[in-house]
Length: 158
Image 1: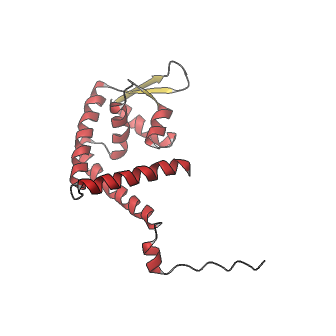
Image 2: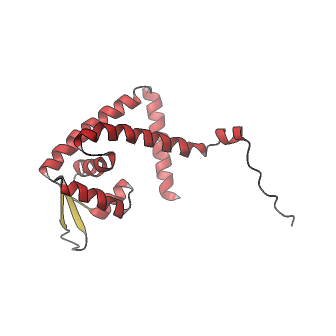
Image 3: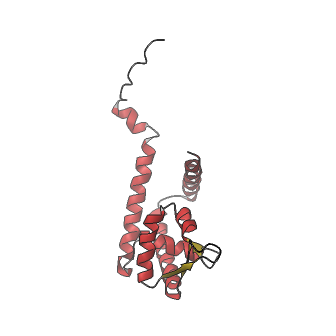
């Protein structure tokens, strides 16, 4: 069997056109989007990282969520979520107690203050999203959303 020749790096034009570059673009869009959100929440003393669990708890049909479920829903590792939840607890926005069915698990819920803050943050987030996406036609938005949802589903399989 003949030896496999070493792969040659593609020329720069091939790299620029490569579908693999999509990951870099998605990452750049995410970072810029998050920066815009962070700037709008600065006056509240919060960030996009703190918005995510507040809004997830606010939109949940259940009165509370287990910490592990919340981490999985947000696609965060538990240690990252613990830091954010601790900050939110210090601010009086969330509280937790041992889960009734599993005393080792924490059940997280919004306080009254946290519910009001989550509602406010959700409104601000939707305003920012509308500003960012106003350049897209409804068809472009639909196509983009469908493609990103398909990619997100695929990522759970990889």
